[in-house]
Image (cartoon, rainbow, N blue to C red; front, side):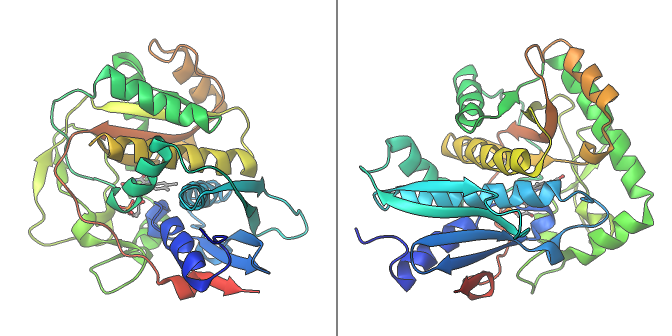
Length: 328
Ligand SMILES: Cc1cc2nc3c(=O)[nH]c(=O)nc-3n(C[C@H](O)[C@H](O)[C@H](O)COP(=O)(O)O)c2cc1C
């Protein structure tokens, strides 16, 4: 195979895979730049950061990290090995990673299948069935995060109940915040856009005291929207990193995406739930980590994920690739 950065078609294939990644509110806060056919740079697009929900840019970095994992897999399946230098130049604050590719033996079966899962993965905001996620799959999810240097904890019932109470409290706080609602209105749509969360992906409104999935319909009511019951004790996963700096967030994003693609590969649906993250203080993080079911967890919570078995869901739009690729 030719070098993956050598041709327009090669670059297009890589960037198309990268931008299929999940991103907070589908902001797609990334840009790519190909430097002299040897280096593909991943940049943050700071104009797409969410000032209310994401003042520190953590969710932006996690989103870009997810795109970076897709890019790495796409390079892998061309018979090359990605060489990634994360956050290489403090003088260029938007530059998150410089990626090179060197010839290598073909991808492992796992990497080939994770790459194949990229276009099949979609966030599901629908209720999941009572069928538990089997132990073997749970182990694979934990191993996927570990392969990226990040811990995934699968909390027991007590820790799950506590986590859900934090999500619900954060959800209520956000619902009363005009700044949050204005931001949500800006990033939701009824269709016809290439970014933002379209109303056909909102899922039903939860009835009763089920899981507090983020309600994207808060700022954009949809007439005749279904109401449905969400299981009270879903299988949650919590991603944690030791540090809490941009490099850790970028790593968390790569772990998130490896976990989500692993779930897709095993037929498991998932949705991130990030409502309480920037409201968690250290005391609450430590308190959570003392709960039974989160034994070896330590560090900073970067993501809460709900896993389960649900119906197929539609994908969200993406900006066309010429909009995100800059040629040097
Ligand atoms: C950092 C991050 C945070 C997210 N937070 C939430 C969330 O709190 N609730 C939710 O329903 N989806 C959340 N998502 C999923 C995005 O809304 C979703 O990826 C985006 O709308 C694109 O849709 P897709 O994942 O189906 O491609 C998050 C995704 C990322 C990467």
